[in-house]
Image (cartoon, rainbow, N blue to C red; front, side, top):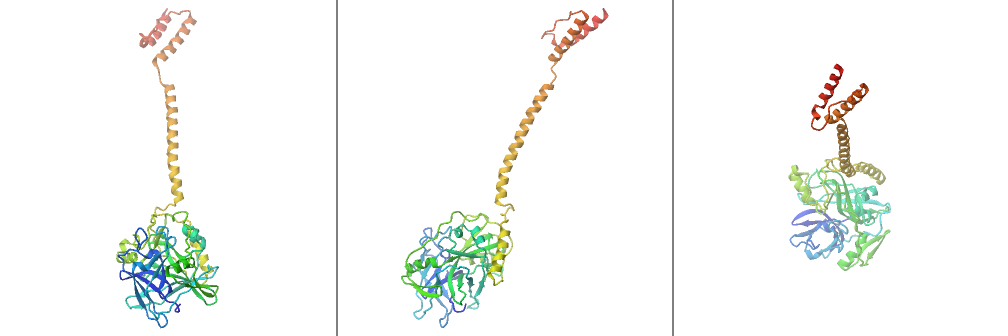
Length: 424
């Protein structure tokens, strides 16, 4: 990848994790979430920007200042969902710099995807060797975890591959650019890093898995032409031409929010990683480079899975296994969302059923108890009736009168009468 030139965005004198996809010697694509914006998607004028280029052929490395007016954010960029996460920056390059990138205008169609990141080592003031990997991923995994990707799969791609961050060896960093190998030796610029979905809360050991999403560049060539006022070099089936169409295309909005148990992170990832590096006890906090999505944060504690195979088929098969494992993933309480819903419904119903059984049982017990309660008046009447029958059989119906007044003495009178009769 030495024939390519790379560039990084700097903010307030510090290198960001945001790579630029170079259009030509005076313009480049960057992710819109790498730029500090106001609520109206205007560039925050309090931030000082620069773009730093790697050397190329006879060209030395170069740094150019960027004024807010030199940033053009895509008119349909949504900072919450990250649809159309793209911007064009313009700068005054060297007059003898003739580097020009070429953007592929075709989808991948099974072509090899090559992910690249080249860091500038500020300690040695030199560019590190580019980290390159050609890896794929099961497309259904990307769709299952991103509603935005689901409705824009030709505008995006994703991978679980990451690189070791220059901030800390404990942190992972997504690759910055995406190229496509046309199998005939032609490697063409294809996409730029947009954002990541984390199964956890950070890229420094706080996530079990990371999916990194890239914005495909060819749908935005018209936006670039419209912005810079000149054509853009493009490649279509190994044929190079100048793209001059000024139509501004836009993604479809996602139909739903991201999965509540994941974290959406993007933009400049280095500030958050510096914070975690310098304050390891706070490693479960949200990275400063994350994009707020209102999602809950889980707290898994394993590193991102890396693939070393050069075979996309092997990588895709490995990611299928990762997807199966992820399908049983749970949130921070250890229970899945569906299990929580089932418990939330079953517990109130169970309590209600127990209450109904208790009320019915108590009512039956009370009725049964009332049936067995001793009533002295009723008992006395029963005994008196028995005594009358016995006296009638003996030919003597004379009994003392029984009324409410002498109710308490009735049993005694009955027995006394019976004893007197026996003496006669």
